Image 1: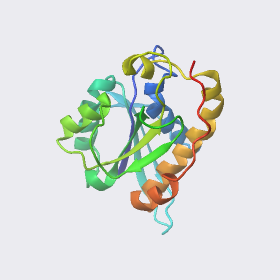
Image 2: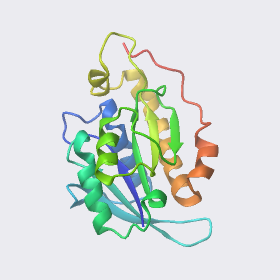
Image 3: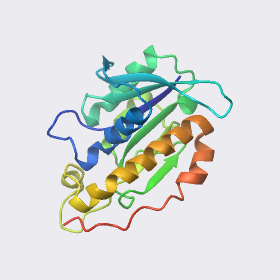
Image 4: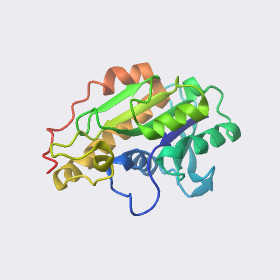
Amino acid sequence: MKLVVGLGNPGPRYAGTRHNVGFRIVERFAAERRIALDARRFDGRFGRGRLATPGGEPLDVGLLLPETFMNRSGECVREALRNLPVDDVAQDLLVAFDDVDLPFGRLRLRAGGGAGGHRGLTDLIACLGREDFARLRFGVGRPVLPIDTAGWVLSRFSAEEEAALGERLGAASSALEAALTLGVAAAMNRWNRDAAPPEADPR
């Protein structure tokens, strides 16, 4: 089984914030592939489905949105990995999350690496004791106005960004499927060159 995790914070207070774009990517992926995220497992929202592969063999996929808050995401993922038939974390775990170091809407797939200051990823790496798992970073940009990073990621997208977000979430969903069915290296060749829309004024 492949396990896809979207990082974010639970509850209506955080819905629509930049920090929750990992949730929105996985929700978009699930909706497009008719995978219901309606089970409550591992302290999160969980769904399971199958994807078609180029070789014709169906691929079993689990989707997980931790509801333990961002800085405790690792506990939920660790529990899921203990109980699901995920054979190899390095090959079978894929995490989607926001990144302030990328322009709005830009995608970056990586096979591993550090946390880069992201609290959810920091906790995940600490709980798993490893960082050799794939991740999809979605750019949320940095603020022009004087606001700290914590305040920025907990703010909502501007109207201009929301107007462009649907297409970018669709691109992220496609990048996830490519990484799962073709492998991260092949997906990187396509989606890491994907152009983001012109940067919106966040004011």
